[in-house]
Image 1 (cartoon, rainbow, N blue to C red):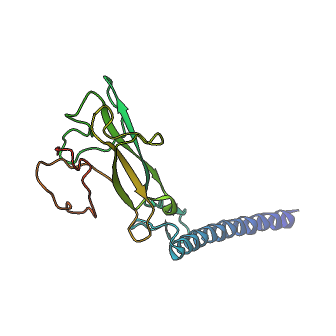
Image 2: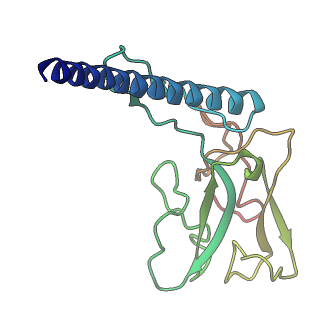
Image 3: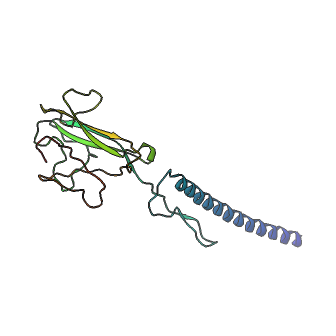
Length: 197
């Protein structure tokens, strides 16, 4: 009876040891799969990543510890919204120096704000903005000069492979010509031909 008990005890110890080995093997396999997935995405250009490791390899008896992988966030669209007599909703493009972000500031009762929409898919990202001035209303878009008697002003965007994908946008008000600010890649004059900052 005692030898059978010893045998059962040793079998349980072996099973426990095998279970720990199996857990470690599964953990190592999960880490390897995560590394492979990241390497494939980077090689295919599907997901540019910030400087972060997808995981941290720990000693054999440690519990796996994962760092989140942070992909770049791209701008995929900018929605133009107007407000009359009410405060704008949060999330609009701000002005770098803390000045008004109202595109229509000083031009009428309608307050106009731009709201960026984001994506983590680089294929949906926009890479270029342009300003379209015209005398006829475009019913598919919101006028950035809504409520003013001059030209209709529309913000157009494009996915042009010749340009880098846009990751952030901001406004810069100035009464004099400006060059592209440090750490930014491009700019254009949103109030062109308007006699404004």
